[in-house]
Length: 331
Image 1 (cartoon, helix red, strand yellow):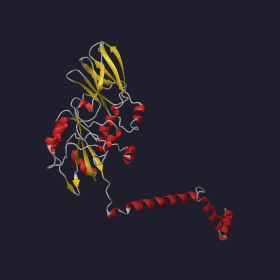
Image 2: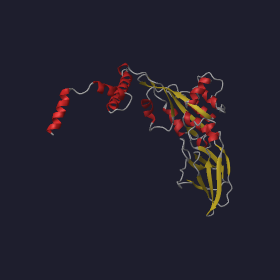
Image 3: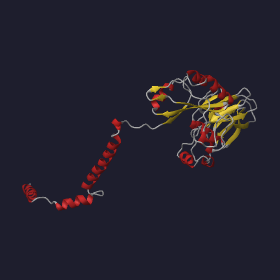
Image 4: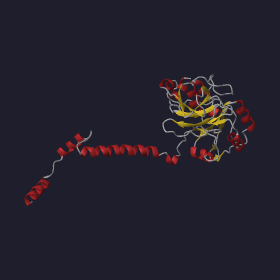
């Protein structure tokens, strides 16, 4: 556990499932983590994304059960590309109620929900109720997680007595936040459920004005949603043994909203390139000595004394002195 703590202090707060730790996170739908160290043993759920191995039925079953579903995949073996299952990818893209996210986002959102702090104010403007709401980010709250979480939009559920929400704007610039109904990737915005509940996703420290159609409309902050946009499940895909991030990721850039957590594996340098690190070191050392020599000629730096000593030990020859004198006389 101590080694995992050291790794986490460097910013790597989510570890794989083969850690042999007893404390776990999301090994099943009810394995909701409550402590930081439980993320040191993040379970695999839903199987692989690899074509021929992936099971759409398994993925669907895990998503419907809820919680964080963590698929895995190895995209290349040596120079061979491992194909992904397009049916599974299409299911994740098209099925509502799924937050498509990464390890870092999932952990940061979970950390943010541990600090349930907000500020609000109500004013009546032109026969409409304006609620100013801000999700607070306090130092005491961030210190619980060693200031490591990203400041992501957290989703709040707000009861406005079924009244119509006309819009949500930023308090500082009056910029309208977009509707995020059905949106699967993390962003700020809002929408109103059929039961009238306002679903509001904002980052900490970003105050917004919520305009409700009606005067003196009461409101109540019900809770923070378990997942972004009040989705019922979250899905991550971990790309294991990633040796070339560009080759692995380029096929998904424009084709899907699924997000990948790339577990990058350092690649051993080829023999033909093995000399490069030594060349870099050599050039660096040579550059330092050249600069010291230049400074010494100007009487500066640690080698200036040596340069002065050499100058005193090698005075100009008589011939040079005579020529200088002759030149003065001629002038």
